[in-house]
Image (cartoon, rainbow, N blue to C red; front, side):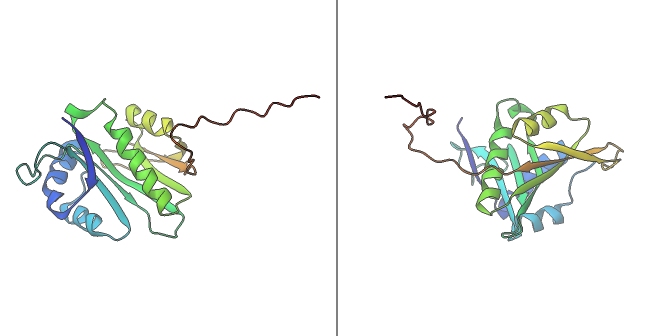
Length: 177
């Protein structure tokens, strides 16, 4: 199977909501809210699908999704949501989705990206920390079942470009004559 990331479309809503409800049992977004998010000019939602399957033949083939809210020119972005089916976890898909959202935040000229993560989710917190997010504080009892949310922020790194075959510059060595 090859994984394909693509922009979420309105016809992905059913598959996204299935995964949303399975992943965030007590805190799943209402379908109307997700529909508005997918249609928002300030949002950027991606889905992960099997790149070898015809989407028309398998409309529920979404096995991951993630969303960013980042109005152009605001300087900020917010990771709204991210979910990966249990069978596809641990293979780096969450990291790839996050990296794609961070890249889009950079294109939208965001300087900072924020997110909230459940305090009782060490795997997600570790992923976000490995991507450069730092913990800012705690929102007590943020989630419906009373679990705290940890607020995190990323200072969006600048893009570094160089030819594909180039190595990072070596320190300049001074020579004496």
